[in-house]
Image (cartoon, rainbow, N blue to C red):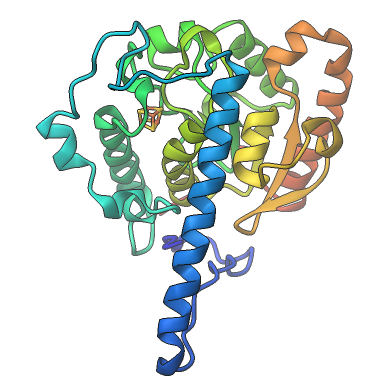
Length: 302
Ligand code: SF4
């Protein structure tokens, strides 16, 4: 991923670089291309299988011949404006086209996130844009050291365009304050930027379509610790096979950034006894920040 590099704080050592594909011999290129095509076919087949399984899980066993909206109305093709905005280079797997290539200072940090928000507002990569009231990109400080990643906007979030403002959001705010931080000092976002109708679980293809935005957000904000909230966020950043009940509280890693998974606040509202486990996880998050000699907020970007 084309991460920008902070120009203000070298005390924590260089950040790990993304792995780059190296082609050692030109004579190997056709074979490499063949392997990449085969991998791509396998990836598409897997995505299609997940898609069908997701539809079956929703009780859908047959699809209409023409594309329809959630209400069953025929859908027109993407607008010209959206076609212009949906440049293929913006949506590689890493979202790197949305990340500034040079050092990220306070000014281009804000500019980069504004550009990302604009891209989200014009995005039609999955059907969720049709039913959203507002896209929900983030809340809190762009220069935060601690990022919380949730699942997707709910009804309240969709109406207000701000993540975690419903009942689960109020609990998250209390959890942040219990850690000794303020909500405005951390950065809060979701895997999906648009609300799935009825707050249903995001489909795998919706997560895949939206993930470049989250990856770009993390590459721009460059937090010191990420706390993933719930199964969907954990799967998005740590792999499709992780189980939140097994990995919660475990120190993991995303692109060289320490990650602590914990339960989603909505789950905690339904299962109050699990709050004590979430609190243990949050204490680990705080310890990680303290080890680095920092709180949750701005560490002094240039
Ligand atoms: S949920 Fe994400 S990928 Fe789908 S339309 Fe909204 S912004 Fe685009």
